[in-house]
Amino acid sequence: MSITKQGVPIFAGTADDAEASVYRKVSWRLLPFLGVLWVLAWLDRVNIGFAKLQMLDSLQFSEAVYGLGAGIFFIGYFLFEVPSNMLLQKIGAKKTIMRITICWGVICMLQTHVTTPTQFYTLRFLLGAFEAGFYPGVILYLTYWYPSERRARAFGTFMSASAIAGVLGGPLAGWIMTSMGGVHGMHGWQWLFIIEGIPSVLAGIFAWFYMTDKPEQANWLSDNEKRVVLDALKRDNAAMGDRGHDWRSVFTNRKVWLLIAIYFCLLCANSTLTFWIPTIIKDVGFTTPMAVGWIAAVAYLCGAIGMIANGAHSDRRNEVRWHFSSAALIGGGAMAVLAVLLGMNALPPVIALLAMTAALVGTMSAIPVFWQLPNRYLAGSAAAVGVALINSVSNLAGFGAPYVMGLIKTATGKVTTGLYMVAVIEIVAVVLVVVGIRQLGNKREA
Figure 1 (cartoon, rainbow, N blue to C red):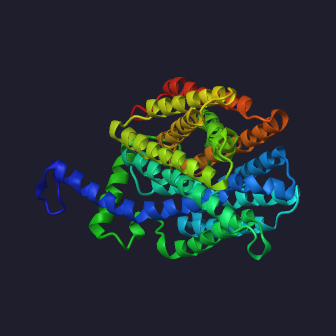
Figure 2: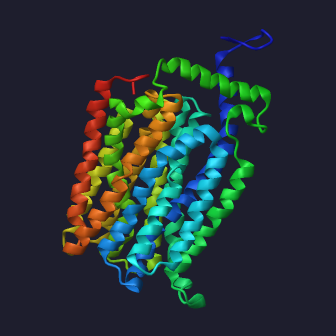
Figure 3: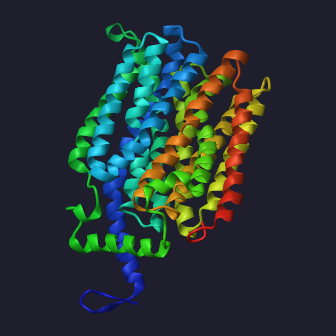
């Protein structure tokens, strides 16, 4: 039983229902818009995978050039992610998200004018540098609003936007590249960058007027609703116990480096699928941009469902370790099966596409659950820097995996060897979580 401000007793269930009602309001306010921004970011990041289907022939680039260009995005990401999150902690999410979104939209459009590998590498690096703070910034931002028992679902809902971007992005890219080729003397891949860059600039301007930095500043919540959110956060912080607050300690914290190793292994798989799914679909036998786009859309739709469902189930069970490891195990196992299937001749394409979809679903479903782990060990400035450090260092996998896949594809004509390699790396993530997290000990039995 709990007591209202006026001293009237109410049942705990009633208080829980009131809190749930407030958080529904918070979620409807925050998550759809953040999801739209993540869709735009994801489209502008990965549309290169679809542009590749025409761009390489148009510019006479090799598969290795593409792989390096796709991956060099993450070098910029690595260098600027921690500074961006520290700036967010200082000036707030609204200003930070506005800056990031406008800048990545502009760089996306500038890719239209690429003619040499050096220009390609430079703009991909700048795209990564400008987008660097968005994802870890949103992760940090959501911790300002949600207690830990509600975060996995919030993270999963937000992160599923990347899968929704895959659902929308494939058919959209196929349509643009098919129908816009030759318009005003430009190739379809050039129109792809222009049409997908403009909405990001507009959304960044809108973010300034729409976003609210912290619950106490939300004029769309009543005073009582603000109190419910702040009480939930205060209660959660107390229950989590003593955690590191000093950001300088993050760099020598073995828990942080274990989390970096886990997420690095997972992102090796995720970035491989992100940048090579169009090529895999083409290698299976579907060569038109529209066909590739629609098949990728179905796979990403399944990924979105998996992310939301696994995050919600993790919240209900208040359990992280096994929800992560089972999803990543499915992802790694399915990727190994995909490699076997691609190495066989006269195989029905649908079987390989099912394995590809299972690899995507498993890998993506592990991501929102993983982001429950850092805040079990870090708080305050340490959380701001720690989340950014984990994401930035781990995303170096996004540089290495696509580049190595490009080298392998150039040398052998196939991606099979690369898929075997990445499947093993994803299984390593499972081992690190099952063994390493348990040995560290957990808050609330991770």
